Length: 92
Image 1 (cartoon, rainbow, N blue to C red):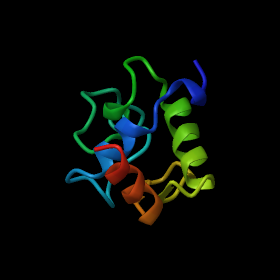
Image 2: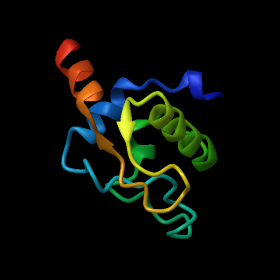
Image 3: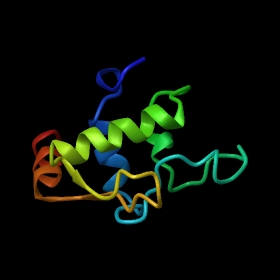
């Protein structure tokens, strides 16, 4: 699986929910593989996506300026921006 295999629209819809601004990247490592926290972007990705790939996808979306946030692997704080909000409006 590669970044191109992970659709962006479910991620944008996830961020449009209550987690906009405090969604995290890789969750299992931080929580010793306990159940995935509600604010983890892995919940918006296909089942089985490794955390490393999930973070790479988020970095890619930041580089494309589809979302804002930090792709270093820290908290993430992924959030929508004007471009992503326009995409969501166009896909309703």
